[in-house]
Image 1 (cartoon, helix red, strand yellow):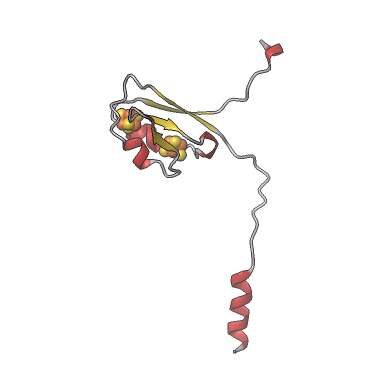
Image 2: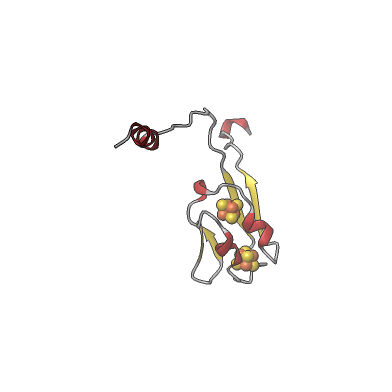
Length: 96
Ligand code: SF4
Ligand code: SF4
């Protein structure tokens, strides 16, 4: 084996760890089931595959913490039945 091919192999196995120190953003996804016609577009477009059909064929989120906030579901819903919003920190009872 040549010296050049050895060097490539070493570089290929090196693991790179990102340390940005930023916290992961979270999002809330709301469905207005009265406006939804269960077409399934939102389920097909979600890149995270976290929107599934309930027993009536209407969408529900199965893992909200994995939502990346891309808003593909909101943009593509033909009935404007989805709202994606940044998750606000929960208020403490004493703050009210
Ligand atoms: S915002 Fe994006 S990741 Fe989140 S539920 Fe909608 S399509 Fe999926
Ligand atoms: S895209 Fe809109 S109308 Fe279609 S299933 Fe999703 S929420 Fe319902």
